[in-house]
Image (cartoon, rainbow, N blue to C red; front, top):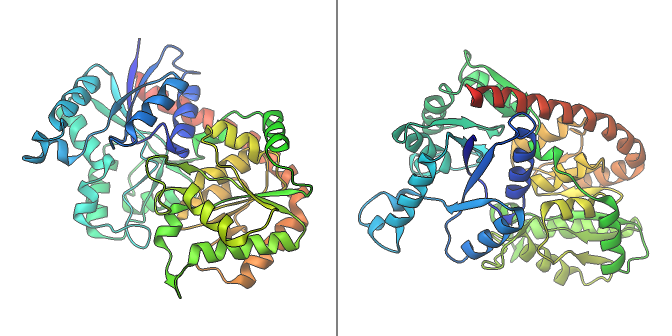
Amino acid sequence: MPRYFVSGLCMQGNKGGPALALSLMSVLRQYIPDAEFVFSVPEDNKEWPYEQEWAEKYDVEVVKNISLHNIVPPFCFVFGRLQQLKIWWATLKRCDALIQMSAICYTGPPSGPGTFLSMIGTTRVQDFFISKLACRSMFSWTQSYGPFSTKYVRFFARMDLRRQKIIFCRGNDCRDEVRNLLPEADAISFPDVAVTLPFDKEWGAAYISEKYSAIRLIVSLSPSAVLYSRAETINGENQHITQLLSIIRILLGMGYSVLLVPHTYRPAQPNPRVCDLAVARLVVSAICDSNVMIVDENLSPNELKSIISNVEFHVGARYHSVVAALSACVPAISMSWHSKYLDLMRCYGMDEYVLEENSSSEVITRMLEKINTHKDKLGVMLEKYQNEVNEQSLENARLFCNLLKR
């Protein structure tokens, strides 16, 4: 029975982690039906109990991830880190291969620092070296790469990617950037596998009806701890919060109710720099309007997608909230901080609905008015695109499984 060690994801916190994990297992088992999976998840002691809790709900095995602290003396001799390393190593040795799923790798400015230390500290680079030591092949599932804007990013990316028989890229821009870095590489563009994540539209409708008494049509909005942490503070106001409030006021003026749908939920770290729910609460407290509501329960990505599937359109600053909307055939505006957003929107013919970090209020207003005018036509268009991306995801899985079987 083939057994695969999957690294780079989580079972809780960022809902993109389990969205990818559940989708990955589903599509790979269509070609390797008896495949078993073990997931390496964040080792933070405060969040580890929640990782175990959600792993049990998803019926998957998890082990604590490792870092340089588990390897380098004297750090490795404290807090049980050496024992953690032994468990991780033994788990990898019991598996046939390592599947690397960090989702976004080798990122330089303006999206990431791109320094030497930032590179060697990433899960992707550590997995590359450890898989060599363990004599296990490392296969990288479809993810975003770049921008390759520093010499350290380019060095580590070349070292790793040139050893991948096929480089599975999440979108055309990502593929083109990889081909510019490695002209001889076999780089192929595919959509994010979470476009295949199942959902229950009726469950979502019942949840909204039970939890919220809004009498108006609903637009969903997913804030981002990433954008909150990247944003400037002007006159004591975080500019991501300012932009979200501007969007909400425009939507209220259009006659909509707004449902905030956070895509990171960290019970152990309710900090707006790492937790979308904390950002959403700041927004709700600032707007003080009964037509602005929040999903404050710790739900699965399937349940969040089921809720989003019932709204008129979605505004997402979280990547996998936009994936959920588009793959449920709900028109969406993405609030971008990386090219992966444009890549995703282009897969669905929605690339003109991307808001950059510092978009003006005039640009925001025009885009909201535009999607509001065309939302019905866009919904029909998305149904066509969803059939195409589902087929592409299955082809992605077929090619990937062929590599695993070798």
